[in-house]
Image 1 (cartoon, rainbow, N blue to C red):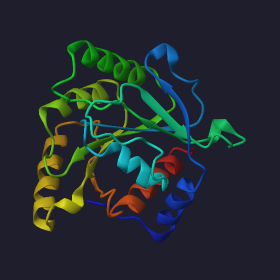
Image 2: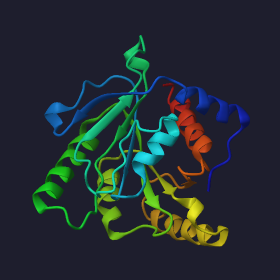
Image 3: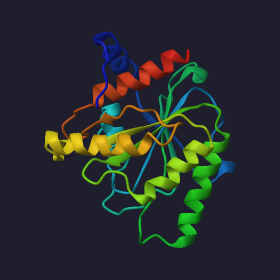
Length: 221
């Protein structure tokens, strides 16, 4: 599930993320999106899936992305990168997309989040891939179908990342992996391989970095 990566790819991933990560900007509407520059890697998932924790683990920053005990708190696209990079057109940016699937959220907020995500996916030429985070303890839910449908419709490259994998036994994780792979097999736009991670224990983090480095290298970015 973690994927097969050479030691060279693991090192390339480490170097890719070994920069001075900062908050760059936030956008609550299409009009407030920052100018398109270097490649963007976005992360999306249900509320409380562990998205902020994963971004913090990837960047080796404890509080770059704010974690919250209140699901659905993030209502903006948050952009992170190296604000000191001299050539912004080759600077990779990480994008924290609004969480979804929070039942207690007002319908107007849900509509606003959906519109923001749709506008971002449809018009962001610099978006290299979206990683859809799925809690390994629960697998894919109906709420995930909306974002997967939107990604497929927008023809945006996307891949499933299982989070909190350390909280399952190897057999439980294998079962989750098989169920998710079977579900996404019906979605031709989805990358077929899964990555299993644990922000708490660090499992799969080097492999996810390597996957991103491989993606950018394949695209000449």
